[in-house]
Length: 159
Image (cartoon, rainbow, N blue to C red):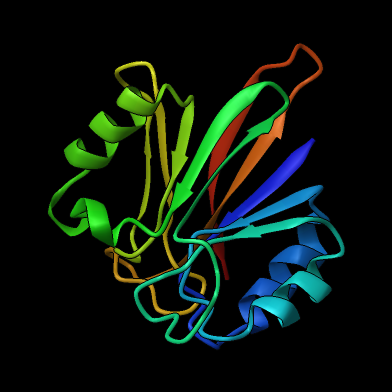
């Protein structure tokens, strides 16, 4: 199983379309700030899409957060701004531990991050439209389940 994790597309969807075409995922997780294009993104994905409300998704009826299972792993998706992720990941990590999830996916900072400490995987795919990390490369994460049921995460960059 291949899961594409993205965030902060902010109406600039060409990168999303390219990544979906390249990877042909089984599931897409979008961590918010699609800015009204959630239906276009879902249609282009060709697979189920889980998407949450970002701080720029005005007048949207998207859920603020989602919790679901992927291959037996509990996943929590939030945009992250309610957990002060611009200041660090401690608050969101502690909330993930309190909820008993295996993986938390968030966006908002436009900087990719993968943290596997403290028994929870914390994933931020960065942004496919407006990257803010050093080098400013558009980024996303691929989460793959291997034949042994183990998850592997890769931060990838769109050239």
